[in-house]
Image 1 (cartoon, rainbow, N blue to C red):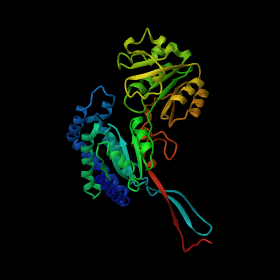
Image 2: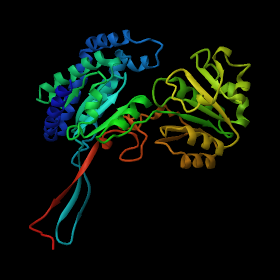
Image 3: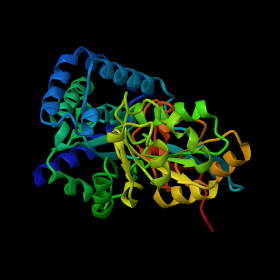
Image 4: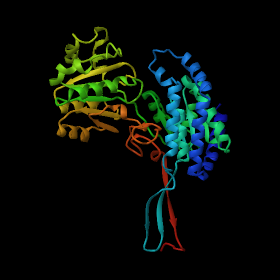
Length: 417
């Protein structure tokens, strides 16, 4: 497998140069054709997805991430069309000046080259990665998990069917789903220009430790919402419940509710209905446990221990921490945050500004749900991941974040003395 995969990587590196010559209008046309064909082949894609679903326990938190249906395919196609309509990110003059000797020096946006993406369970990522990399003139190496092997094969066959009409089918590679393929990709120096892991902390750690090619890290989402002493109750309830229950398996879902001790009397109202309607299991510290004992389903109320904080639950579970002040809330977030998305609910403008200023995360919110941490919601069309690192890209990564630049120098015979 290793020899064959290296040959495929050599082929995609060579084919990536074809994308430089593709015009923005042609890319738009091709992306819309892929969206059309994905909907036309809905039955084939969903049948393949069902094979993957049949191998997974429906109670597994990853089941929802794996699931495709007609509605989700429509959304995927719509996202692809939005990416198609976005301005061409390539060939932009980012900076330009003329030296005294007449040299004209410009910095121009260009593709990175070949981008590898490693991801777990989520077949929608296959479409998203293709759309964004193709729009930016990058070839892509897709390394999905065995959980979504059939789905990914069906999706990539659709993509390649369209690309083959233009002689571009070799610019997309679906690597073998087996784990043995991953180290080959991670060490493919000169063939893969960067790797982006999307998935569990274990996957991200493995990629970071074993890659010899550049890594753009998309970290796990350990997400907090702090309900301040000056919070509006109606806003707090809506924000907390949306962040926790909208989609529990995504990285921007709420993991830990932090609440000021003077608002403990409102805690029952904030989580009201989350037991009966969503069966959310709450791991509560001592004060919040006592505050919920008479109002929350006892089968779903668990006394928290120290290991219940700093967890990305990815399920209908969350923890609650009671604090005495904003400072304690900030300290708790600093200790347990994965620097993904953090929120405060407060009507005190000074408190809000302190929170926004001092919390170290890619996305920081005031009086809004962390569910908005998403490339589409941020106006990027779609996202290739949410970076929690600070170099190159941070937060949702769209078109601009997967381009590079080169210096173009135009002269007229100048030489350096």
